[in-house]
Image (tube, rainbow, N blue to C red; front, side, top):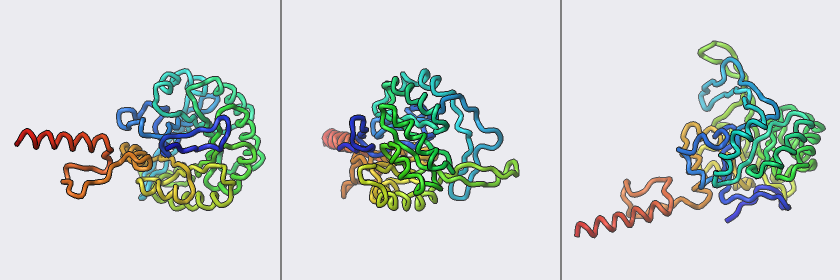
Length: 309
């Protein structure tokens, strides 16, 4: 089965599985290769990239919360050209499409990035992250500039302005909407004693983004796919977003806590997890088991039984 995650057209993008990591989760495609079977994912979304180099944030960058975590990184990256040069060979070897997350800054930067990325055949689509509190005029101009590139353009909507900005970026040429960027918050760092601002991640984000997906699905034209993102920590969480109207999902912090969870969600929604046999013993099945592994185990057990006889 194929899952089309961008609007129909010459450069539309279809995935084998409707599950992918969110931007900033798995680096630029090589960080989790020993922990996650990338063949089971729909795509890989890179860390955020800017035209020019951005340095890491100073001070506290992570604060634990009762039901999640607050993260403030500053989106460090070496700049678009260096990223492409360093990871192009890595992307070429990945078994799934690569979506580059590009931070929306200025129209000039967007146009320059578009021209550069159209030369990079290892990038299959571009995801644009919009800043919080962006005006509708600025959002339109940025996405209109991004839409000039030949690759599909996905737009990650800002959490607090999702409804206000959605129709604007669709009109500007967005091929899909991602709902949404993580909300911003402030928490006290127990180590330094200072208040720290950043983005909030965790299970409690899900009810809010899930509602956004359902409302936007009723508001936006049906040919514009919506991708759900935020608070997904289990296969059922992901399925809730699909039921609400999303065509695919992006998983973020669950991957940091349980790296295998990303693959498990992908296997579940992609139909690669086998159900437990009625008479199976506890050591003959586990929640992540795929059909291939189940068949191998059954054949091994039959072989053992034959040897004993």
